[in-house]
Length: 181
Image 1 (cartoon, one colour):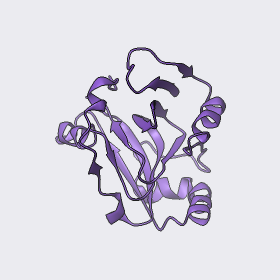
Image 2 (cartoon, rainbow, N blue to C red; image 1 turned 60 degrees about the horizontal axis):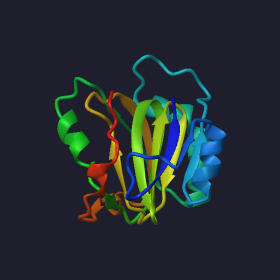
Image 3 (tube, rainbow, N blue to C red; image 1 turned 30 degrees about the horizontal axis):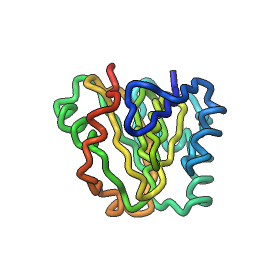
Image 4 (cartoon, helix red, strand yellow; image 1 turned 135 degrees about the vertical axis):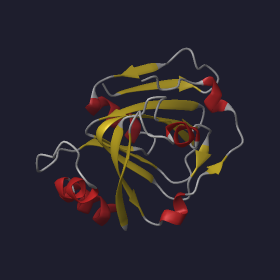
């Protein structure tokens, strides 16, 4: 189940706010410039859909975002608990970092935990099937897929080179929750 927890950045054990309603999550995240919305497939997906099938099933929403925000490239990424590189992949984005462009993810299946450090607040956003999140460019954040990741996600980019992680060197991510799955 998707949810949002908001903390003061120095108080990782005591959320100021917990939101489980997706509409209320979208409203709360919009206050800090984060897009959060739900999509529905326009076609039933097969049990193990390929990239083209996934993109076609969500084409209307993808094209809308491309028009609204100028995204140029779309792909699909997936991860399973038996993936031989799951530990390396998980560790790649567990530390606080930024990107010079938006980080846009839509969860076709599964889940992932995006944690954003905005001002003096930390926003933990557990995204699940049907959720889209767009972390604005240059927003400090980290991402956890958990020790047993299972997800299929659509990614949108303006420029894949702009999506390179620039680590902040801060250890704040170590003090906040990890995704357990």
